[in-house]
Structure formats: C-alpha cells, structure tokens
Length: 90
Image (tube, one colour):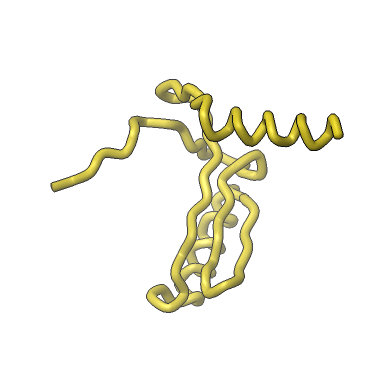
C-alpha cells in the first residue's frame, strides 16, 4: 500500500513539479535515428570514429530506430550540457 502511494507521488511530482535546469548543467539525452531514413552503415561508421577518438556511450536498436544514450554512460573528451529551451522556428 505504501509502495503504491510512494509511486503515485513520484509520478505526480514528475508531471506537475518541473525540474529546473541551469545553463551548462550536465543533462541526459537520447538521440534516435529513424532507420527508414538513415543508413545503419553510416551510423556505425560515425560510432567507430567516435570510439576511435575515445568517446563512448550506450547504444541500442529496435522498432526501426538506432538509439544513442548520452547519459551516465557517456565518457571521453565530450559533454552534453543544457544551452537553452527549444523555441519554435517560424
């Protein structure tokens, strides 16, 4: 019972209490490639070049997508940081 209540509160917090992200704060990002539009061989070549230069991260594939997870697994001479909130371009 308490476990269910705790999970409900956590979901509510995630939906209704926004997290504040400051400029240059490290963030987690997922990059999803649509394999119907991008050649998997090209993605593998990019991954090989990044690995050759010491940049490593988790990858995955499924549902017609190739995914790069830039989270705690990201290592090497690179960082992913918040720049600004996305704005619609007209």
